[in-house]
Length: 388
Image 1 (tube, one colour):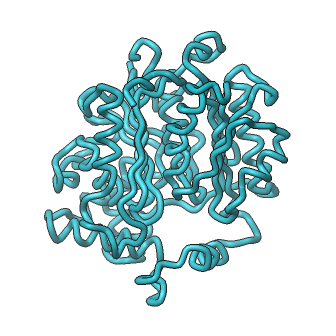
Image 2 (image 1 turned 45 degrees about the horizontal axis):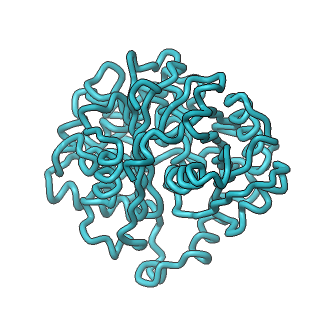
């Protein structure tokens, strides 16, 4: 896959309705983000001949999206891998672009899970009915929370990770969110606040868990030679890979090692980079344990050292490694599936458009997304034009 390195670039990004999108449907906010991303790329909807999209509640979601946006794509991908789907869409889109099957791919997502009359309980029930786990569903666990609490408990037992170290992840995310006007939660948050908050699934408190928000995101991918002629600074895809080892958490080979160890290794190999070369890291932080696991599995620290690695504000503004600079799923936005926002924030950082949270001199970024119960993992390495 090294031949694909830098062959495609993200030319436009946008979000819409992050937080509460009262009065909108998920299709409407998806369309707003899609139109804004296409305009950001200096294109029109008539230029879009590729589409990647996925939805929790609709197995045929690309078809109504095509209809609503008035597209006639020659390339379509509706692969659903949970929250990692939109990072996973990069590879098939790059292949389609290289093959000449299409010229401009729109990747888009929208959800109004916070304000929709089809509430959270109904969404959870629909997930259980559409995707039952034979060794887990009969016991009625509080999924996905129970699964991530299990992984956190095992990490604590095996490596001595503490609740205070987990809390550091939430505090760092909030510190970044306080610099981001788009973030849903921007109030002060301390380690003691996290530890004192309501326990929801031991050892995770409510502040160890992601937000429940509305939100839509979109980006446009084109061949890099075309991107150079478009108005926004292009952000090249240097490497990307996806790995799946299991579906049910009960089938996970090791509760402390995720398939990010595979997707990350392959993405780094394709990019010709190492963790030390990455300036900005955007991780799917559905729960605080995610950040520790992914920092370890992606090679930013040794296995079991994630807790110590994040101590003392190390991933906060001013720390040694900028992680989740928009506030992440813990404090910025989490509309059911968060993966697309890791790419959008990466692009904004590399284009120098992140305002008060801008990481000075950022030239490379890693975006990593997770789906299911630590089930699917997708990694992408992005770079500015002169990093290709």
